Amino acid sequence: MNASPPMAGDFLSLLAAQKLAPFGAPAANAPAQTQATTVFAFHFAAGVLMAGDRRATAGNQIVTDKVDKVLEIDATSLLAIAGVPAMAFEMARVLSTSFEYYRRSQLQPLSLPAKVRAIARLLRDNLPLTMQGVGVVAPLFAALDHSVQPARPALFFYDPLGAQFQSAGYVASGSGSGSIRSILSFQERYGRPKPSQMSLPEAVRLALRLLIVASEFDSATGGVNPATGGFATLRVLGPDGVGTVTEEQQAAWLAEG
Image (cartoon, rainbow, N blue to C red):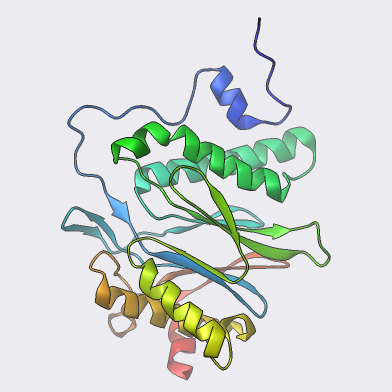
């Protein structure tokens, strides 16, 4: 029996039908994998702030302190990567093309549940590399939920096998995520203001300080040192879509606090 044709607008099924799967088996004796950590996101008063440090490592080697780990997938979606950048960046490119392919072919944007499932599907397709320990990716995802009015951001996190979870307040991934989750949990319970009540400048100050603290306990987290001009990758998702917090804004708002 012939396989059924792919659903209209399904870019991932189209790739599979043409035997162009984006992820393949690794070569034997592969070199040490570059790893990227740490990323997190939390709700603030006007939307979601997603943040990432700038360090990538390979074993005990620091590869670079200039990696952008928070990626704009489309005008209403953000992806933060933790794990192997080579695989994560390819996933981001496939997702961006997939979302745009659906929008142009079906004349409407992909729904939030479909976007969430698309990421889970890519992670499952990456399962052979994950099981070998050479292609592990544990991303975070934020996108606008248009099923409510006004539209509001929703936060999701994934395990490397593709299981998806929604978070009401904050998410974190990567080797420095333990410290960040602990501080965000404390702040959300006892902080004044709570992260979810903060203005954008307050949220930016908190995000930078979280990454600085995480770097003190995790050698794989780094590249954020305002004293020497090193700032985080910070992007905002609000009702109007995606925005970027520049290094100049980070420096000015951190100085105010």
